[in-house]
Image (cartoon, rainbow, N blue to C red; front, top):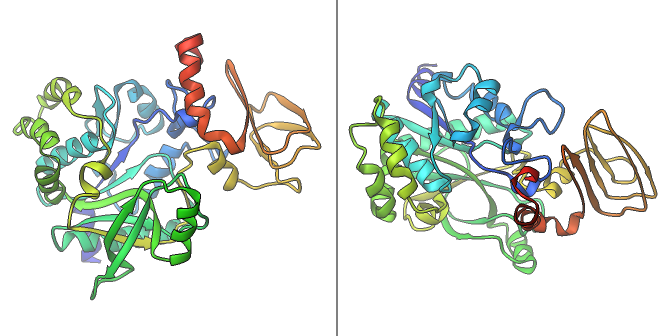
Length: 368
């Protein structure tokens, strides 16, 4: 019990919630991206579910949200219990490495002994008890040394939209399936993904990370010195009223790069804890289709009334005040929201992001 109390005192959670979610257009819009939406009719958005999931691990006052300044009001609306000081507002979009570096400096200034769990805001996890066990074991592991830990998820298909982690040697005398990382591979083609699945050595890269604050800051100094230099210049301002003035001036100067490219694929102290959490990153309409209940025709209905004739394997998403009538659709997305309607093959959903860019160029921001 004492260990649990100590863990809560020094465990912080960083929830990254500044993405735009353009692959979920037209439901996910620039003014209200997918992390703020209730996809499953639970009354809680994906962000709220992520926050709820961490409450057994980290005290509420140690849950930090890093987001774009445009989303401050939405976060205050959805998570009113989060202290205002815990909402870190990025003045520009710069991917995950600058986000992680700023949050680590902020937390280290508050608690030099801090351990940080870093999570995306928009993932679905069905096995929450297992999630808590995995995170608790991971905290114990990274607290014990200069270690960077990522969560690798057991693949259920040769998915080409995820990055993969190859596990190496198992770490002796630790709880759980924790191994040295042998390699990272970004989004392989289908044939390579099938090979990965057959070997049993590869796991999906979940984008969930654990480390001590001092360990990740050392990693930035060694592997991403340009990013480190920008945020090191703010020493003395973190955790003070001057922090945001520094961030507003310095943050836009950071390169836009992911934490995977900046640190994880270069560092020699990276480990993976493997798990089966009933996980989906809900990054695309196909991901939502895969994890949703289906009727006898393999159709999915999301929060709307549907009259479907001779339709199979199709996802229908609209509002509860509208009925969708369709005939002869096989393997399509039909998504109606606000001033936009998307009818697109599920097999080509990776092009939705390109479609959004084309809409913005031809018809203006009001449609995205």
